[in-house]
Length: 167
Image (tube, rainbow, N blue to C red; front, top):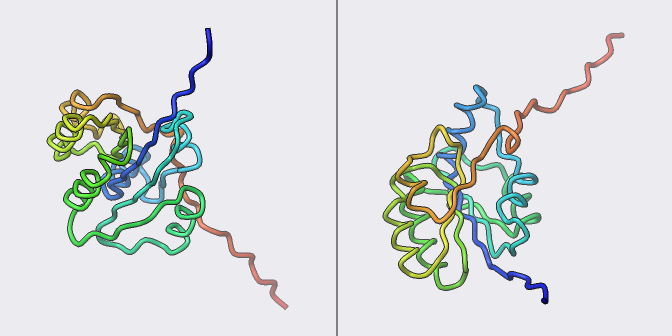
């Protein structure tokens, strides 16, 4: 019997505002942030990353964050005029013929119809979100659900500035 290697192409689309809100609520800290270095390998589970796109409405994303996503995951940040729902859905539909699996990082029930459509196009759809903030109907519609837990985020403490010595 020979070993088979599954070569699957995965795109990860993140509704940044939804995930950030969920993590802030779960951690009880506005400074909690996704730890992509632990989360992405867990989501991929040995599969190949085609692209990572982080959709974010409102407050500007730091250049450092955008640069890090690009360098480490070929990722990009897409600023959104209002919510991420429509831009994320359009991008997911565009990517449907280019990847085997789409992972949507959001627990928002607004994505149920998108998940249903993508599955009808033959794409495997997985959801990654904080369980408490994930609509059951979305979990039920997806092919697989990844729970984002406290292992997948960290609380940013800021950079401590050295105190100046008094003369």
